[in-house]
Length: 590
Image (cartoon, rainbow, N blue to C red; front, side, top):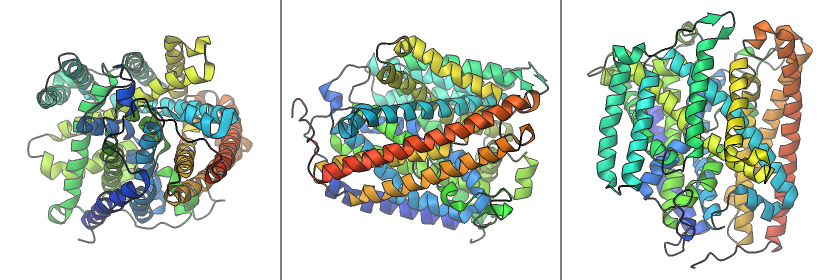
């Protein structure tokens, strides 16, 4: 049993159970003390667009699918450079002591401040300088996610034939269910049952010869892959519609129905990992590869486990993206305050399970097998998941259908979150540009998709993606500081969020510094050592080298912005402890 993933998965499940039922409930009673009689923003400002109360069960599915993306799937693969033991420990303890505290705290912070997002809350705590710094940081952060996710969604559709047809079927399922739920006022159970039927049909259609025939054959010319260009453009068209429509029309029901296949994939892989002593699937990866990984030193190209491990696995342990979703969207749909714990903490621990099963999928593939698959995390995840679950799903699905299912699940994890990212870009643009043309709904959405599309198809996305882990986790540290400031001003205990906040800020600033040094080395080495990907790497190496230099400047800017924001929030925390910050305003109706 020690030579299989089963025991380690069981240990993680026990730890998550203690985090939710013991530590979580004690923290809930000790710090936030939710009140079911306090009016939430969903009832204060009901408009059917952003503010509307939602059942805790529907909101749990929405929250999970809004925070769970590709981070917990791809992050553990990157962390394998140190061995699977450090990755497993961070997935368990990061979520236990930091991750769910941030998600839950972000919801409560917004709810206790009349549904306001981080922009106005930061202004209240740190002034105009802090607000401008944070919003600028968030805009760049959203651009990083968009460029990467649009590129990956295009690659998934191009790699796994049939996944595009299945994705479109699930999108239509979400739109239909949204109309039935919010226009026809049908029972949520009946609508969910209908969603199951329509989604099964979507996966079936995608796995048929007809569904698999829907693919592009535009071919490639050298380093240019026109298929990916077109798939990326189709993805942008879907995201544009999702961004401009009201939440109950597209994103909210789409994310809700997407939860089911996404969670089914987690549960079936989890079951496959638990029965590995029976199926005979064994561990094939080393548990420990050293502090510097296989390279052995920084000079030889190795990365230090601290801070890199803690930024490589972001979502699944802790993620700044979650704080944006929780404060800008979920908090506006919360029916009663006690729902925040199952929705915020429960969904975060659920995403920890996704990271756990993803790590298990990689643990059963040998380094040689991963090399045969091209060394790519995407292929490794699908084949590792198939290896674990073939004894279960193989009873009623072909291998080709299983791969269509997992390929579509990858798309679902990416596109549901990217729809929210595009929408948040539009909302943040309003706060940054005010009445300017760039704040106009259609213009800001178009710009927010055009820039990532250019980065995705040119290969420059890889440069900014390398900063994603650091900036995402830095945002998490800053969110924890905002939560801590609020708790300090209402005289609640702060040590449970302050210490994680300081750890994340120091770690992520160090990670950004390490990555900036790597870009500087590449830039000084000339076009031959560029970190930019094709087509620019092959067709325009000089331009690629210039992008490396630009990445150095971006890294410096991110470091300075993060450091400045950290200082401003620490100063605000000191003022809050001294009683110099105003108390939150009472909500209408309380």
